Length: 285
Image 1 (cartoon, helix red, strand yellow):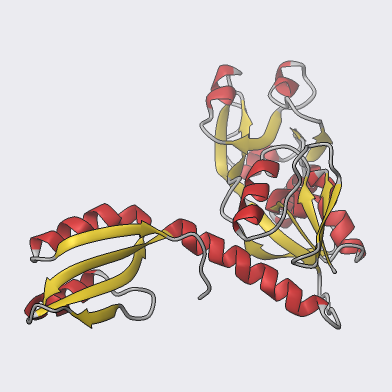
Image 2: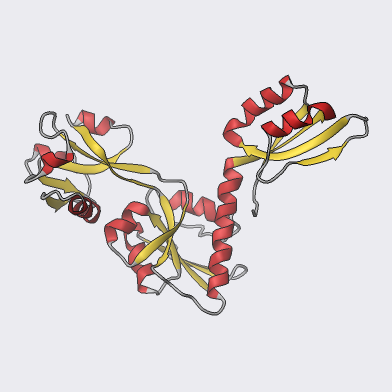
């Protein structure tokens, strides 16, 4: 039975559960459940603190897990990312009071406060910057005001909270994070485990594609088919079928959902009619 770690709380928990549900896996009904078994899919889910998941996976006690790229790197665990999941995106930046620092080299000799000591210490070392790093659990914006550090490193989304604290970001992003599937580095599973890991990944990839694409159907005249196909090439090639009315064909193709309205307009302009889009709930490519 495949053993999978899932975040039990925080910004990763809800979206991870939704994606697993869309992929056909049974999920917990109550937040207090720490373990459930999905016998139909031969999977056992363990609901753990997001920060601990990389540690459990690296130990080999669990086959794979879902966590944040930031948490994986910060943990320094012997685990690796095998599939990005596209949710819980975040960007890590340095910030300080105006006039304190403008470039990475300005951090030399300064103290940086962060909740992600592993990420920041590694980044500074890789860049050859000699700065001290102090670990704080949350609310790092106050570290500068209280004199604990001259600079902070934290997740930046809109930057509103930093501006409210009188701080501004500087330098390049430290890293960009999102939810990812991880496994122990160099893991070589035997027996039934590896096929189940690959099946799990295919299911999640199917969800990602289903969320990104819609199915588009339309009718067009044969003489306009090449122009229409150029607008809707599909993933490999569109399906084209003759209609009862001579000189007309029906076309079906997957198109990016964010471009669907523009494509429908363009198809209409070249004479296509009966243009429909349908949501995709699952797929295998």
